[in-house]
Length: 594
Image (cartoon, rainbow, N blue to C red; front, side, top):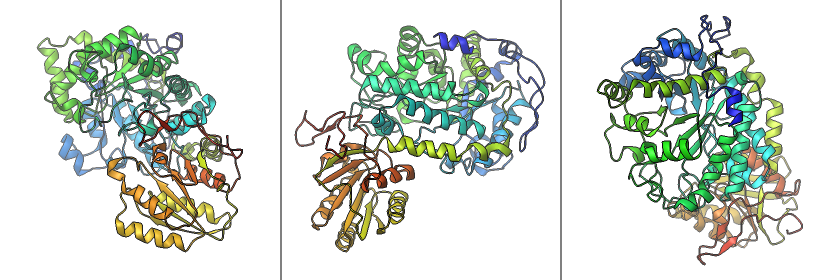
């Protein structure tokens, strides 16, 4: 906790807002008043304070873009008007809100939103966020620097690489005007059937997951001066790793007892808190052996106040996961959910189903005495302190003219490739790899971008290569077409993506059909490594990612340009022998076979 005190995230320090007027390209003038977080809080109305508790999205490429979805959902035309109407504490960006097109556009949108915030209401700048976990959950694509994601970093086993990946991601986000990243996932993926975490987790090993979670917190928050870094939000407390249900569409129940939680789930959160995490996100899960309320953790005082605040000593900002998810909306009306979350100990309320209903619910709870205004003040104080510590109050704007110097810079791209090269894992090799460059190669399987990227990287190395996308659920016709095409090539590489799940099981039929052609086949799990247990082939590789940067590392391994050094960060169970691992934790072959 010394790190947090040093940063001033707990105490309402006297860091001034608007130390100087700053005009930037595509931006606006910073506020000129010098107010500490404490002074800001004292001058805010109840409505302004309640607005600070909420984070939601708005539709449009610029702050002044009139978008019909804004009128339908919020009753106003533009993103700037959404910010001003609700006095929002934060905005979150998605591709589906038409917010993420290219780095300069994102930076200009960010500046426009900040201008709306500081020119109205309490004049408090926004937290602007997204989910740039990397890997499977990546909101901003190229030219932003891409990484293969957490499980790949777990395979690399490098604290330095995990921290560097976070630092690069954070610096690029801040250059685009985003000062908050909902990452990393601190969940320990001990359940191979987990449909919502999987490769978003660093590992099934609590110690490894804890080390890399803490490394990323430091990378996001400590790699540069506060005005150039982003807040990390570690998720999903108290731990979403051991479930076979998705909290987006149901309310998962995790049966860990106290000892299991202490040993399996708690370590990453403990280490993240020790590293000074600005924010922790709650999970919409029920943990009956830890909390007998029957409520999802997001709405449970026993979990948020008792465990996170009390037992782990966390003093930063607690934010809910999206309040639109079915896991939290199962038991209560939308007007009550934010009130219950605040009573449980949450500070910020992410993406309520109806923002006006949610805000009115909180205001009504204060006016009727269900919530005290002092309780609201406690959360707003934490939010303002976080904004102060990250330099958001001091200067929320970015220089759009400098975005291209940071986002996707040659230095960042080179670092990402080096890091990714240390994550590719060779699970099985019966003498097939590395390949002698064949005359022709065929790439097929899941992922149109991945298959195309790999084929292109094969071609630059000499062999002719063609690609055929068969998708997550290949049909018999697609499987037959791929098998016939494989017969006409010297070597086939097939990419699988969560083929272990019942939904995607026809991918395994594709692999078997390719195997039956008698031609050499290399199989590559480009998401969870669990696919490798289902079909025995001479060569299985795990990349944990289908990003182009991972396909480049895969090509290097296929042709022996680098030695595969990744080690499994999770065990791969044998589906035919319960309790037995086909490939154990830590397994990974080099060219020597060990």
